Length: 47
Image (cartoon, rainbow, N blue to C red; front, top):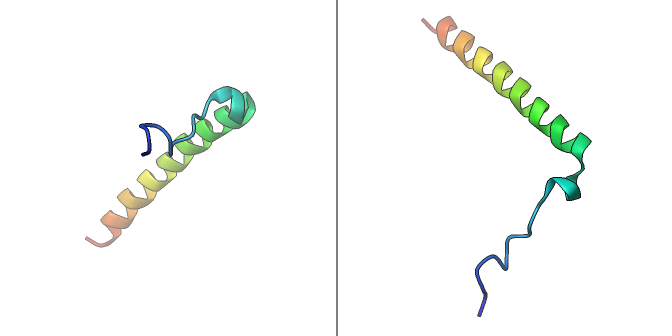
């Protein structure tokens, strides 16, 4: 029988690395901003 948490490995900042963690956060924020602008302008171009 599987116990709770057996299939999900524990991921920490220490395992990822501080540089990769912050790079991922920055990349995520920038890509969310770009996608938001794209969807807003794409929606306006249809009307």
